[in-house]
Structures are given as C-alpha cells and as structure tokens.
Length: 147
Image (cartoon, rainbow, N blue to C red):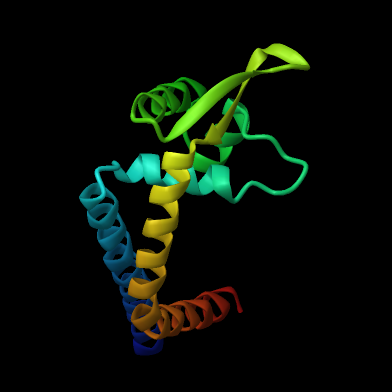
C-alpha cells in the first residue's frame, strides 16, 4: 500500500500535467478556429509558420518540413500540394539537386500569415501567465518525481 505522501504527490503531478494540457489545448483550439476563419486549415497555417521561421542557412525542403511538422514525408508532400493549390506556398526544384523540392511562401501566404500571427499574439497575451504558471508547476512536479 502506498503511503499518503506518495499518493498526494502523484495526484499533484497529475493535476499539474492536466492543467498544462488544458492551457495548451485552449490556445491550440483558438489557433485552429482563427486559421480556419481566414480560410486556411490549421495544418497549412502551421506549415506557413515553419517556412517563415526557417533559420538562416536552412532550406525549406520537404525533409526539413516533415521533421518540423512531425509528419511522414508523403504526408508533407500532400500538405504542400494542398497549400500550393490554395496559393499559400510555391514549390521549386532545388537548382543543386533537381530531385529535391524547396518550398517558400507566396505573397498571399505571407499576408495571411502576418494577419494570423498578429491575431495569435493578441490571443496569447492574456493566456501567457496561466500557461507559464502551469508549465512551472509541471516543471516542479517533474523535478520532484526525478529527485
């Protein structure tokens, strides 16, 4: 039989994890609704973010996008195809390796991304404190669990 302290600590960890998940899910739910209100499926918005935030010296290849989107290669190709049909991105062959595609935002995609980023930041402002608080509590629970 577990002692009362262990049970209490386990419940506190569970509550911390549940609160963090709730705060994240609230923001993700907002994000899905906001992007779809602009006529862009949430996954295409995420794709545009990845492309726009690419580090200097890195190229937006399908492989890179797959890794950052946590998708399989063929799923990323399909996502890029849909975003291209919507006029959000364009794909070109890599001049150094014609087998490789590089993806970039179109001006239309950049315009929509700018609007969505501003909307997301405005929504995130009041959520930051509860989210950070939940993350700190979760961090404490993880440290207690490891220690």
